[in-house]
Length: 342
Image (cartoon, rainbow, N blue to C red; front, side, top):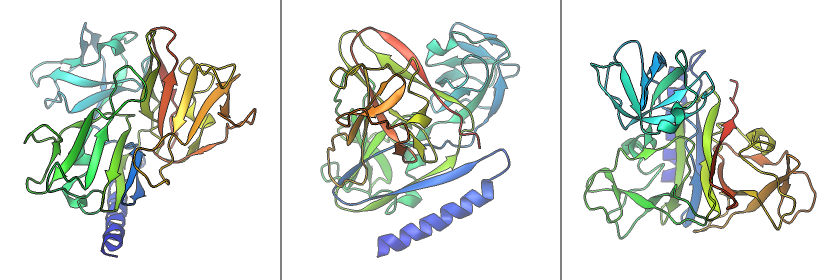
């Protein structure tokens, strides 16, 4: 009962926050999900923090761009750019360096420089981090603290972006009560509050003994977004992603079928591209995918369901997905996620 009361208080606080920051060109919202004890849930953050501003590319360099005037602060590491116009609209990269005395901004992912031209516009946005997604004032609501790394109450698992399939967690994070900060299992006393949760990324929350209600809150990006889909010649590769949708959608609404990011298959027993989804209403640890979808002639089908069309299959807000690409060639394509159009 105490947890339920605190959850209602949290919802009321979030509603007041939404009312205070909403404007005609700044759509905000929040989602919530109950996580019973003894359960893993697959999550993303379909919201952003307030953007710093919008900027225009003056010139393209070998490692980034220049803008008309120096930026007002150093945005390295904890901020990213999202392009909003031009051929790269929707692509993003972490800022690796900038100074307040220079007009140059360098990117961690220089691959997005291909196709950039002077005049293209981009936003600078703070990354979500463990501390911003799980702030101290939500302890006991969105997460439970732990007294030791060997007795984790709430654990947050990050999944790897390396090539391969059926990937295990790359890192385990927990909130240490005595330090009032996030720590990483096996990493000593290092403060992990600023560990970045990248855009369009999924992670796992495990509620071991204490049930929680996870809340995510922020701005809704009202622009198209792109995310990398990687295929390897040496092995099948699981791309661990999110649909980044703040509202419910459908398989057809993903704008994935019939694109270069997702290949048709001729048989459910020889999937060239496969989409795995997880059911967060199933209460267990280490869940397997609840359904496998693939496309034939640009329309969705479900493994084991014959020729039934699943284009209208609903997906919840903040849908998390794994796109498995069969190991046929080394290739990187981009999935263009549609603008919500709010």
